[in-house]
Image (cartoon, rainbow, N blue to C red; front, side):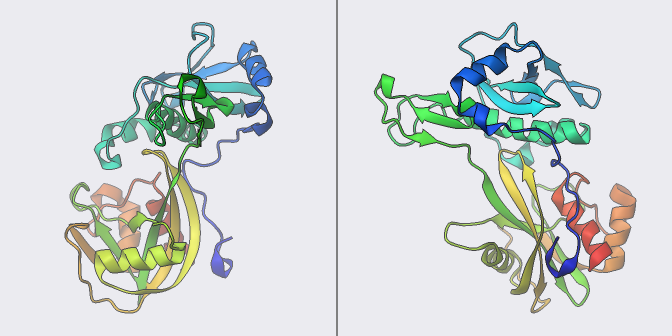
Length: 302
């Protein structure tokens, strides 16, 4: 439940329904048993992209996977063990440069989208962390793919490393019933969305919302509250949706961060969500993005 008794909205890329089965992750013998089971399945990937059948993920058996392949144990899907193979390369491009990949991914059915989101983050992280940042020696997969250890056998320091999730504050900022929305220079024409930015070390979520809004749009924010969160696998972020109130509507836009920012009325936001790309006010974010969910939540509950 969001602050103030308002319900937390359902967010895309969540609701995978998997049993993460942490006890199996930590037990090499159990992992081997899971891999050998007749009902074990491998998530079919082309690099870090899913192999899809219509709007569904594709799963194959593990018969053709070499014994030395790096496999991540995703969990149990309806009781069956699910694995994903780490590819030769990850995808280090900026999220906004992965529009084609995102379009393919976002066409997936809801549960499959949530399953893939977690799997993609893991295999991408493993593919890009094959060397220890502490000593530079090679690393090896551990704990079913939920850890990666510097290899002492090859002379490494033995340091453990864990898949990272980068927290991002994404916020609806309100003033006298209007919303502040911005557009990145890489956004499609006429597209606007909630302001957002990474939470920095040593600051709270509320402080990040205030700092990012002040830096990008030049307005101070008060009474910040949490609304909902969403895993975002480009490459591995946790989008933390918030709502706050601006103390002024006078904008000073940081053009190194934003192409534009402006205030939109409730009627304009409603028209945008209703008409999508045909809207006169602005083109809304994709409906799978938490920014869209936040806009819909605001119309209904604020």
